[in-house]
Length: 137
Image 1 (tube, rainbow, N blue to C red):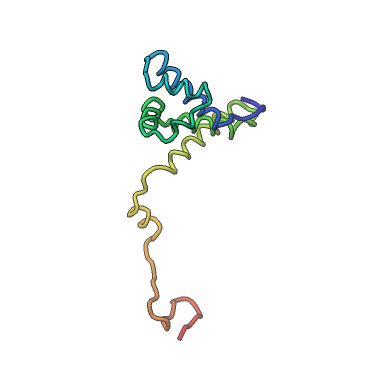
Image 2: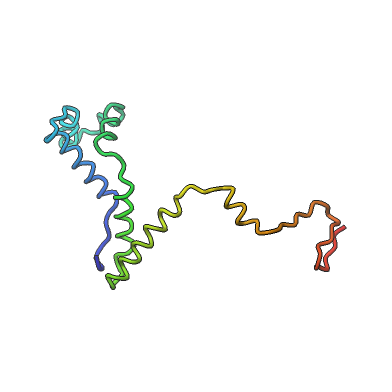
């Protein structure tokens, strides 16, 4: 994982999808997968793009894999780090930051933290702010 080129994320997702279709057609003998495999092979997939049954089939055999996508993105982002120990620490820190940023926000706790012990809100334009030499009015 040092130097070289990164992972083409769209190509990787396409490969994973093609693997799922091939597995369903060959191992599971799924008739929809067999038809889909033939359409892909013959370059006629456009004939079936709008078919809702096909979309449902693809969602079933190849569900979204956000962790796999994250792994590829992190790999690309840390490809140039030379020290393997530093690289692993950075990858872990990036994964932790990714999930920390997606944790549900406790809105009330966030507001309490940001408010501090006291807040002064001026509602009258002629109010004097204590400790300041500024007057409005």
